[in-house]
Image 1 (cartoon, protein in one colour):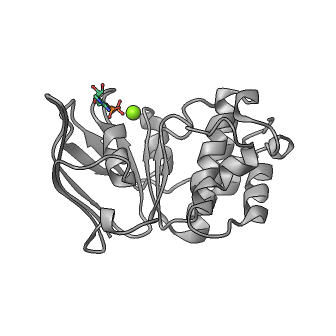
Image 2: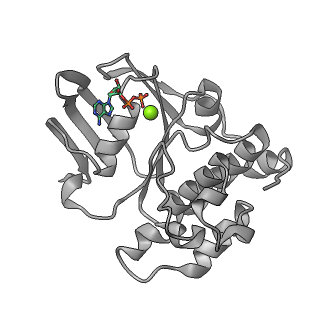
Length: 230
Ligand code: ADP
Ligand code: MG
């Protein structure tokens, strides 16, 4: 279980997060929504371990997350691809830091998201939406128990977004990872998540937690309604 425990975060005099607490059960699929600038990306940076807490704790199974390496598959809001590495080498980047990367899996995912022709291309040759898909599958291929995706589909057209939502749901159905994602779309939050956490305006704290009362659409239904083109 992931336990966000009364956390605070400021940048100089700007308090971004104040007394924020919530829990995520193993295998849960949770959406985080809130006004722009409320601190959602900062929250994910804290969970992803790329910035440090002022107060409180982030615990995974009772142990501070900073003490546990490689437990979060973090997709930042900006794709953050390394410009001097090929697309394939960007997909395996996180895995490569820990052990021998699974190249076949990386290639399989590039194919699934329609980018197999771009394996040896460089990030500047791809559109923003394509880069976002590379960043998305990098988080999936890193194969961590928790996925934290910051507005994963914001740069995609409607059809591609449906396709990527379907891949996320099928990954979740297969591996039962915990998935947390930020979205500015209430519709997307209700479409994908079991539970929606609503944050207040900055400084962010939890305003409401909503159990989504309807069944998630079947993956195949989503995929059948989408026509994918790279
Ligand atoms: P959201 O993702 O909800 O739109 P962010 O977490 O990106 O919000 O930002 C929350 C606030 O914190 C914003 O006012 C932003 O300008 C500020 N902020 C974020 N990161 C930094 C930083 N590294 N230094 C200073 N201010 C920051
Ligand atoms: Mg953000």
